[in-house]
Length: 270
Image (tube, rainbow, N blue to C red; front, top):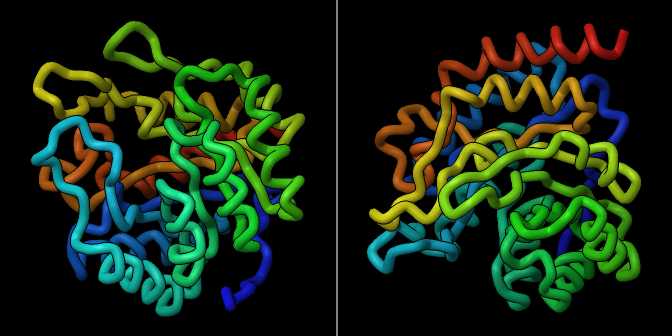
């Protein structure tokens, strides 16, 4: 029996909420450092916080790319972080059978962008009773996201949010259309995935690039446009991260960014 934890609030959380953590669980110490820092920081700033970490990276360009330390080992680390720091946790799933497995360890199941049209996967996540976040595929319009949301709610689960992560622009770039935020809010609360929106995929090297210098620009624009929450991958040393280091935010830059976002939020809402 999957444990039913307190409901996750995706709307009306105050200023905005934050999903943040490393791209992948790559060892048994870095995720704890990140979670401790982020828990203390968000508590001080009054920002609801959800820890994020992928237990396995299934979508890799190259066969020799890092994929994980083992599903059970990584999921146990995520669960321990949630228990130790008293924060909700989230991870992404890739196949239908993973929904019930991951739901034993985390509070929010994330459907990756490339898989958001997979009906069986979305329904399996919804039927666990855990909150579900749906990443908008790079090839989908904002209006089309009403249908994955309907798959979740029709399964008896109203804890659902949409994650905007940019749209494909040419072969090797993404753009974020901020008009999509209010459009998708007709269907569910909207989270802006700041760091993945700055990826530069399909590089000839087989390793995704990124533009982390624009993190604050995209984040501020998302808050000004009314996003309910933000998704920001962060690491103690992005250059040493085993996955997505090219577009992650250095952990020691998070405080200044969040403080500036609070000022933007408050100014816009006035």
